[in-house]
Length: 396
Image 1 (tube, rainbow, N blue to C red):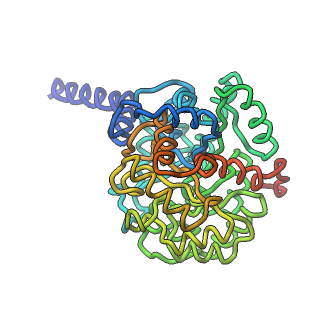
Image 2: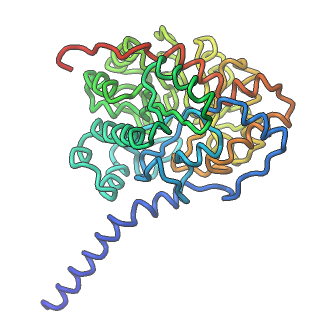
């Protein structure tokens, strides 16, 4: 019996060791995939135009997967070397702090926690095992550390002055990349209004109110209630506006979107989405919602994955962008890839020029292409980010 128990213990040790060494890598490889690993062919005209653009993307979940942002990886979609290869100037990095088991677009609860398994497998600090806010702060620290180690190749942007300085520097050095921190779902507040200040201090400048389940702030489009903002949610939105944190309405319920737009005094974003007219479904914006975001002065990021464009192809991304431009207006459309968001996309970050080329071949003029591919997001951030760090409330 002792020999049997010893054998069982050995198997347990091997399984646990495997979980900690390769579990997260396997999950990353299985969940973040591409239709083709080859970089899409681009016409000479498309390639030349792309290299003249300021390319920017509103949403990627790279920080969740344990890959060093500075190292080129064969897994997933995004890292700095691939962004450089694609001539991307600015990438928004979102911190994911919780996702439900069996995640779907219709009905989810917050009772399960898949991110805990990733946190354990990647040996995140003990505080992240029980605090969603700690998970967000830890991911912010990882990005900040990468920027410090990059030798000025990667710049973390927290103010409009920092972004303006980066734009000037990059004009002479197109290998430079900037990053902005965002949060996917304000369950990361751990239910506390004071956490808005904590996360601002950690560098977050864009915050999505919900992800795949209802939380203390608002109802999700994929939650159980499909309600709107909570009383805490209204306080949170007001505090975010006071700190000039950009409100992200991706994943919120239609009622929550309507209620935020009714109270908003600043433009909002929908960082990663599709449009219902080209790909019907609860994840995507109706024409009425597109017009409402435009009336607010906001920005809509068009995604690349199946939930946003149905079949993930360049043609479908182009079709969604063209429809959004037609309905919302050219000033209100941007890119929102959802790279590394447990998604299947046509290509990894290296393929971004294919969208420029696709828009050009579809007859879109070069000025409109320049705005959609990143000019709109650059200008939006230069207007909406704080000019200097805010003075936070005493004791927070």
